[in-house]
Length: 339
Image 1: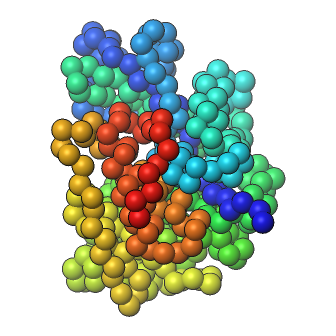
Image 2 (image 1 turned 180 degrees about the horizontal axis):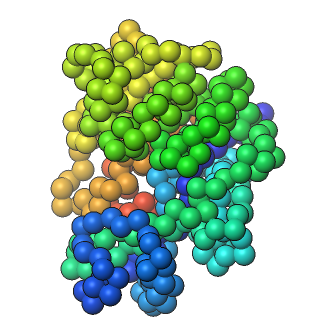
């Protein structure tokens, strides 16, 4: 029997992290605890960062983080977990991104376009950070490239993407989800952020009929419900979102994380509550990738079938491990199955 497969779709970025002095920030007109989408004046910054001997670079972008963590949680074999995205042509940052993604066990299906590879400068200074993302080529995935790999999508067990990817490629994403849904793939989408939920509301509605599993935290789910003009408490609006127009062979499941509060899983006629195993506060290093990591654990367990409690427990375990490391670092040990 062929191994079950996960395929991801989204904006692959190379995260380049380094400790920098305050003067570095001043030179580029940056302040800590802010995000600046790269302008022309910021472009030399990435080259400077990789020339800092203590810098580190890892794959980034929300959906790619989820897919890397899903590969780790599933302990999946070669070519079992793949990611479709776009990078720059003959671009050293593209080569760096492909190398570190492959090291994490994820097969890269990367289109190449005449744009710089997407990256994010993570500037650390006095325990605070500043982010400088450049989406670049990540926004230019071509339909022709997707069509070449359509069998990878049709034969996957799970497809996962992010609302962030609707910014550049909404129509293409909808078409991919339609094909996946018609092929019986478990289709999964994460709401990404409160701003994204509002910015891309109509595009989310266009793809939603083809989405089997919708993920978000409580703020994102509440914002989506508000945009839909739904009424009721969190559990009630989750059920209404689950009942929203749906095509394909499955009922929709809405999954809502609430930090250390219980995870909520809604179908149109029921809500399941799953307690979170708390991590000792002294062990928590970085919670930024907890949501991406939860989704990774959930979809990894989904390969074994739709036991929603087990999927949520796997998601919570994955997140509990990630928050004990910096960023979306893949742990060096194998996951310990406790569910």
